[in-house]
Length: 263
Image (cartoon, rainbow, N blue to C red):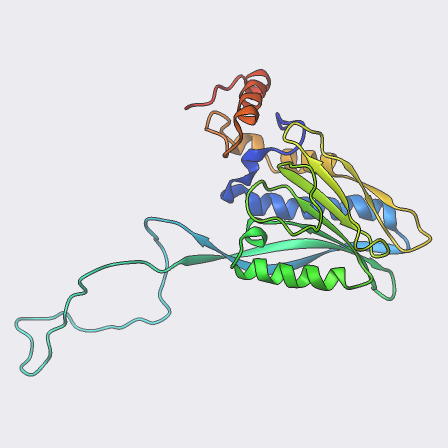
C-alpha cells in the first residue's frame, strides 16, 4: 500500500521506524545509482555504528557481565560483620542501544577514488553534543575540504541542521548538494510537507554528466517494501507541526485513509 503523503511521511520519524527506513533508503539509493553509473563507477554502502539513548520504564532479559553467588543468609549476621546501609535514593543511568546506519559512496572502478558521498541524516547526526553529531561534523568538514562531491539528504524536521552561510527558504526538509568544483556555493532544495520529493542531480567526474536520483521513487519503494502502512496508526496525533501543516495533514489523511486523528 502506498503512503498517503505525496512526499515524505512525517510519521516515519518515530524512533522505532527511523533506523529501518534510513538503512533501506540507503540501499535503494545505491541500487538506483548502480543502474546508471556503471561501468566506470559503482555505488556501495558504508556502514557506521553509533549509540542512541532509549527511555524505558523497565528492562527485562538483560544479563549482567559479572555475577556474585552466595548462600542464603540464615539467622543473625555473624559477629563483627558490618551491616549494609540501604541506599536512601534511586536514580538511573542512560541506557544506550547500538545503531548501525549506512551512507552511500560513489567510487571509481579500479582506483576506488571517492567521487560522491550521499549522506542521509539521522536524529543522532542532528543532536548537538551527541557523539554521532560530532563525528558527522568532522566527516562533513573533511568532505568539504576534499575533491569529492557531497549530497546531504535531511528528511527529519527536528534537530539542528548542518550549517549554511546564507539563509534559505524555511522548510521541514532539505537536500543540499555541494559540488567540489563549485564550493563554497551549494545547491539547496527546500521541501515542504506537501511537496513531491525532487529528482536530484548526482555529479560524477568530469566530463561525465550528472545522473538523476529520483528521491521520491526511492522513498515510495522503501515505504511499500517496509510495510509501513501496516505499522503506522494514522489515527494517532502527528509529530509536532505548525497549525497550517496540521490542518493540511488531517484533511489529507481523511481523504486518503478515512482516518480521523484522535486528539
